[in-house]
Length: 99
Image 1: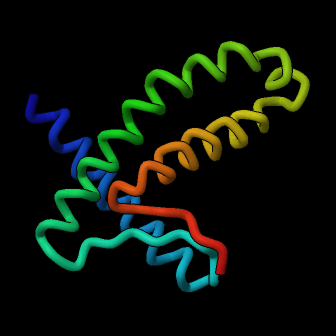
Image 2: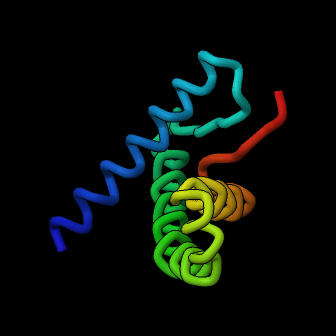
């Protein structure tokens, strides 16, 4: 149980750091964690992202396996982007915006 919690925290920190990096490049990805309540919502959003990646992501990767073979695995980036977009559409701590 401790390892799961550590992975959860590491994923939340990486989502927050990715938000900071993309803001430097002008990309539209925001993660809010200025207060304790917003940090808790970000942790819930990261849990939703992990759940979607473990379920929907695996199903989509299985279905699109032939396309991934043809593109030498690059289509998995599209699948990951779709799963991330689906998690961000829940608006639980992070979102994708158009800047």
